[in-house]
Length: 105
Figure 1 (cartoon, rainbow, N blue to C red):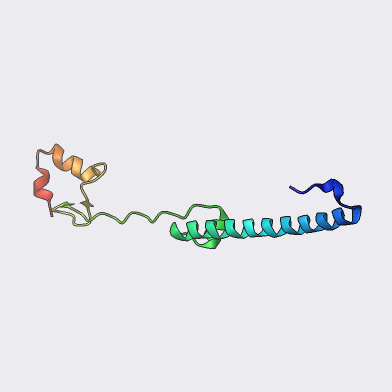
Figure 2 (figure 1 turned 120 degrees about the vertical axis):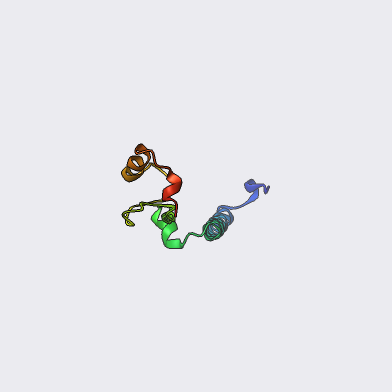
């Protein structure tokens, strides 16, 4: 570190101006580096700059409907994938003593 006591007022002001200029450069460089790091991380996560600036998480794609595994033998519009709650026609079907295997596609 320099001994500032030996400097004149003019020299100290010149030094002050140089320090302020260097602080501005380093601040700008730090912000630029941070911006590049953020953009790199966003691109790696599959986010666009617009999505990143919007501050919203991207929407998850909707699940594709499952293929039907069971169909009502008398009404082909009534189908069920076998996942989730049983539809009414399946409950009725089972209540009559029939097997779900009889409705398998």
